[in-house]
Image: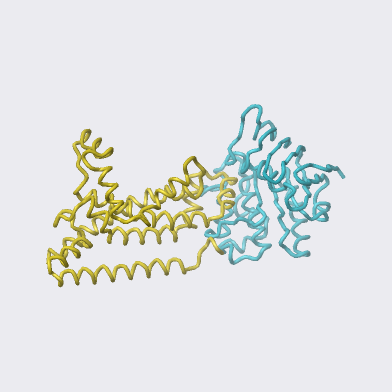
Length: 224
Length: 219
């Protein structure tokens, strides 16, 4: 039983950590891309969306290069803090974060763009600071898109396979998340276990899309 | 007194406007695309002029020479937008209170009137728990005006305030606004593409065409 539950536990752990990161960085980056003009904006926009079309193994390869012991980031972490990222659960979190971030950014950016800038200007003429405008005007009007992005990102993180196997490996009870366990179980002839995990992942994906769809169908303040 | 003497270069045209306003209603007339909204945006601080200055009673709102651009949040310029721009997720009361935050009106320096007084003045006290999508056009405009007046503005800008309303309602609101201007005793800058409306509400009229003042008259 633990062989079945542990990969699910690891998947949830990874997905929750990745979703927290996505909540913070996703909202900040989407807001910047939707509202501000700065040098290299289009380049950054494209770069952040690349994981949508790149094979996940390619993203994993890049991450392995960056975070590996001799990679630009991995080297600094190893030398300064004696920290190794690759083939740990942290690497799985980073892989899920990078792979799921574009889903959040696409949904969130569209939500921010749907809020009329003139509403924000109206709030500012009434004396509201930028931060208050964001919290009391922009965020409440864009929350559906933000929530939809978060749900999608969570599900994507839960199901991440390609980049994770490259950068975190497939180590049972350490980095073997549910999708990796399905692969290993099937390869190892343990079809029963694979089937149960497949069933779980399928139901979860169905619920996710259902939630996202019903969020986008509901009445939207911004369009009233 | 409000003194405006600015230039703003845009793709379609350049806005060049200079005028003074005492505590009176100044009418700004022009067809669409003449630069009326750009002018109001510069006074409120939403847009930054390229040259010139805007002063109000000794406060420099903008000066290209002195490199001053007073933040729009601190200008206390009430702005009634063309499409109301009410916050759709807030009730009438919450919209009206937005500018004084969640404080009691008396705690805000310079705010002499309570939310209730403002809602009564604009005759929307019975609507205070409704949301903007539950209001008619005229009611929405009353809320937009109440919200702008709540901050005890030093100037009130009105961008085509009643252009989407029918005639009898329009005239009533125009008269009410003239009364409200007397109560507040501050400059109202009233923009419209309707010459009859401008003539009715203001004694001082500025005519804009393609960003230039082509006529300025005191009647």
